[in-house]
Image (cartoon, rainbow, N blue to C red; front, side, top):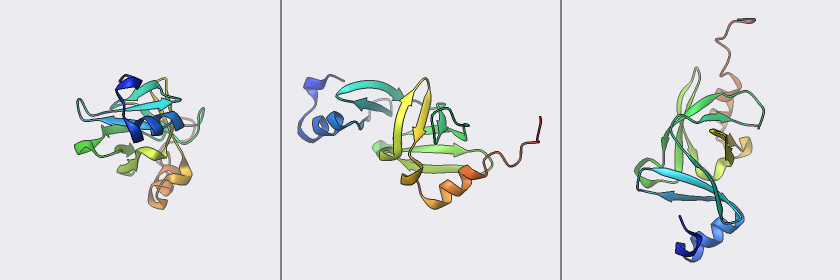
Amino acid sequence: MAWAALKGNSRERLARGSFEVTRRGGTARYAQGGIVREKIEVGFQTFVSDGGEEFGAVRQVSPKGRPELVVYVENAGDFVVPLDAVESVHSHKVILNCRKLEPRLRQAIGHAHDAEEPGA
């Protein structure tokens, strides 16, 4: 998406570091300073800190054009995550801001690996 093609509010949001949702192909593109860094795609792993343990994966991007993701959390199922909760996207990883997630999702993330056997 070209910076010049964006209008008004979209350009302002991208300048602050946010997302642009396109209905074509259902992608969400993370941008910082007007430069598109990486688009979010189905299958990207999800984290609450860079370098931390993954807790799930992206299952849907911008369903029906809404600015959100559907994320599968291990041992808990699918959750809807607003795009403004995404802190960064790189290397097929989506880093979420835990403070912007609903309490039920934060609790599920905290128990994502409970079913794993120690030392396995």
